Length: 327
Image (cartoon, rainbow, N blue to C red; front, side, top):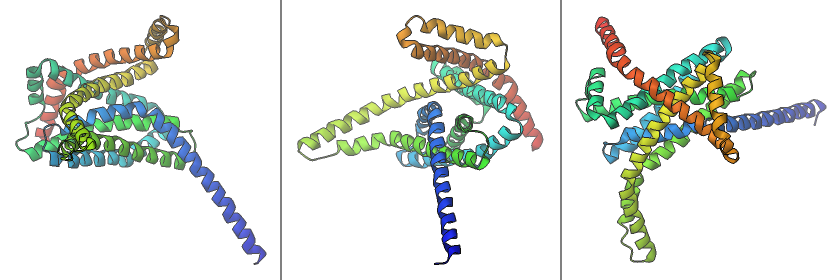
């Protein structure tokens, strides 16, 4: 074997080692970034199953699939390049954009609270915003579009958290890490959502087990419990999802206010969290988190509540007039 070929093989081996190290680095960064975005992932998982309630069982998985595809498209084709471009050219604009998205989440959550407390008021508000669907197909399209729109805000937060967790510098590494996190989180969230929405069908199948063995009886009992418990679980999940939207949205707005608002806001939140944690030092970290979460929730409710009349009497009429002019 010639010396030149040996040298070439040495170079190839060295490049392979560098590539392997780079892959390990990318995997490590993706894991750390994904862990930091876990809070928003929980919110996304809690919110999505509510969008398939009321549809036939055979349409549940296709609807989840449409939402998942829209979510992945948002992350890879819109948010990933946008996050890289904005962070490179105008990094200061990311926080204001996230605040707008957070305000929208607050609005969505506040709408659901109004719907639970004053359903007639909520229906009147929705009637002023958009026309009622005339057939199941259009209703499904509206539900999917609404889910993807809400997911866009949560996905933007996930991508922003991920980008902030990646060391600045190598844009190729940032792109790969963002793509890995986007694909992984989308698969995890909508995989869990698919299992949740089909759990009642699994329960029915278990309840129909006709075996007379102990295993068969256990299967029937478990299936009946699953079928009876799923409506309550979905209602609880809907409450969690609403609370999550208000909490996450309020937290985004609060973070922006701390960054761009008067320093008293940051100092006030910090003082309140420290004062509460001092009541039980052993639970200091938990109480600090709970205090900030509660403040975020209150801000979310206030922002969302303020946006309901604004959307009804200002934004929606302006949008309708704009659409009329375009025709």
